[in-house]
Length: 257
Image 1 (cartoon, rainbow, N blue to C red):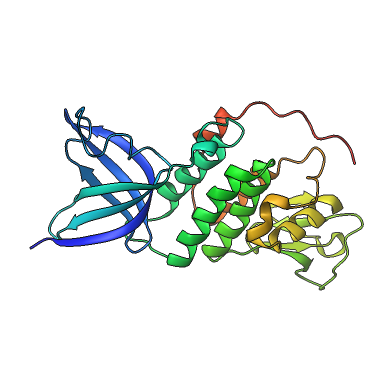
Image 2: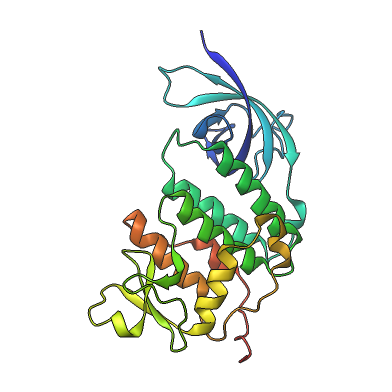
């Protein structure tokens, strides 16, 4: 007999399957990553109409049977549609990029209730913050930490130095800084100027419940998104190209500080 599971889920993707159904990728609080079939979802009077859009948070019921490759979605009720996030092209690409990352990094069945709750808080912050890029960078920093690769921007890996007036080298393999005096042989690294180190160190330790009000300005002429994605890609072992970020309006360069 199939087991009925009631859980909260974030819709990551919804694609057409045959004439009237959808295959839906969900990241759920209790079951982790799972793919389900929503039978009849494309019919005009379907109970799923409008409920399986990407980034919807739903309360769902899943009929699970171990012998099935695809489980069956029997019910989905919207808890949070993130309407403000979806209506703003400054915010939406970041939300979609987060969904892309989860699909590409998490395997089937991967679950973490603490991370799930954090994820929804970050999407809520994207909806309310006037600086959605800050929320996205914060999510990236915490995401790599959840994966076990927390970067350290506080001190030199070799000598323990904590101030970097001339900047430092960030070593991808170690996820740590190396000061110029210790950087004779540093591979797979990138140079961070003092402003970048200060910014990332303070962003990383900021309270996630207040991230919408993070006070520091981003460093001028530094592509923080690219830096953090390079670090993530190094540790997951393959290059992720987040197509959603291409939807972002072009940003004007930051003014020098």
